[in-house]
Image (cartoon, rainbow, N blue to C red; front, side):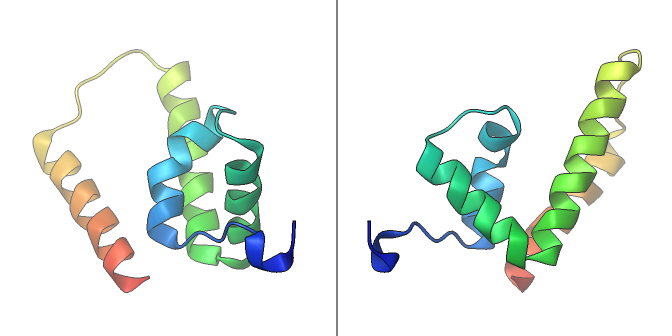
Length: 85
């Protein structure tokens, strides 16, 4: 594999593949591409860390309903972060 054959992902692609990567799924090429991206992108590293912490909290706590306003703000912020990248 030459340098030009290496898969390079942008922030949107990383976000789209994040669940798969966090679950340990995906091809070795995809996982390596995400890890390379995270090594150079602080914004995505923060997103990964936040997502990991959120998932840990959800697993460790009793189920609860997220208020619609909170959910809407989260989606709006994620969309804004993607537009900025």
